[in-house]
Amino acid sequence: MSDIILQTDRLQVRPLTEGDFDNLLDLHSDPEVNRYLSCGPVPMSAEEVRTRLDRYLLTNKTDGLGKWKVETREGEFLGRAGFDWQDDPAGWELGYSFKQTAWGKGYATEIARGLIAWFFKHTQHNYLIAYAVSEHHKSLNIMKKAGLTFWQDRHVDGEDLTFYRLERADFEAPKKKGSHLGSLHDHHVKA
Image (cartoon, rainbow, N blue to C red; front, side, top):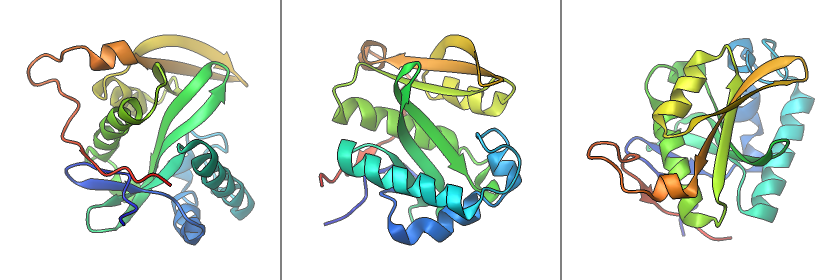
């Protein structure tokens, strides 16, 4: 049985495992990858990476959702993407982080579109949120291209954040020709 959660034209998403600690440590050792994350533009400590991996594994086990590893179809690790519960504002948040070598190739938009389609197909939740530091225009553009719309700006813990949101009804509404969320070959495996 395959552990592939979903595949897009070029990418696949699989659950993170204990064996992915080194992949995540490598990803988050790059200050530029972390520039707009909570730790800021510094290498993330091994302890923080361990804490995050443990949280991702637990969330995936208890909720069937979480942050997962993103790979090429050939199995090369590119980063992580998936969902994380947010309390304020309440909702499942779509998030992604990629190695610098994967930047500028459209991977983030491709995987965001695939994950959005997966989310609305495999959950009963009525909306999905995403957010970024307001000055992170590239990430905000990915959200727009993936079909989310501006929802609100908020000042949280000293940072200006911009939130986007997608309602299930808007996702399921008939799409204009050429605006489909992309090719999705879904291979969700239930635990």
